[in-house]
Length: 252
Image 1 (cartoon, rainbow, N blue to C red):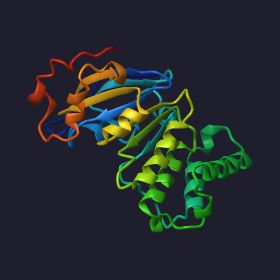
Image 2: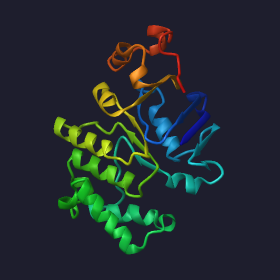
Image 3: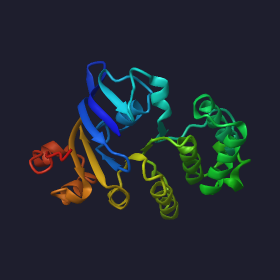
Image 4: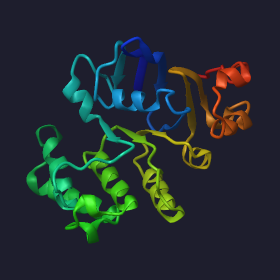
């Protein structure tokens, strides 16, 4: 379970997130939707532990972020919108680098860690690229490699920031399969501008508008799907368009 209680993030005088609260359950696959600047990346980066929120409390599987930040971060896997690979790593070296980061807390022997690396290289169809430099991979291959880095330590919560950006239809299908094959007990939160992907993968939707959580519902119970679909194509805010009358209800 992931409990988010009144988290707020300021950048100077700008409020990037405003008193956001929600509770996610094991197995939830959550579509995070919002216009550019709505706060999606801020939320994902903050949940991943990249910075401290200005206020609020987050508890994941009984671990409070502020009380034990190291144990908290181990529970999360994060794939940023733009993959970054430190140094001139090959795919295998990148996987080994990620594995070493978690070596102190995963309880695995060196043999077990190497076995897990091989398992994930095979599962994500990266075995043939093991000796390729990460920065020389195609965009789809880089996305798969970044996904490997996010899931290698088998996190309880997986955070994916625009994972379908720049992918062709075949690569999108492959990435969709990777997400859908995640463990049933994992919570996955993915931001996307593609309503088709949100509908095909997610059981729940969160919509941010100007830093505020304006929709938090099961996708199957959303009262007005057309308004959500329109949101992907419109440049105006949800609140200006519909007054939030039909989308303001939160069922959790």
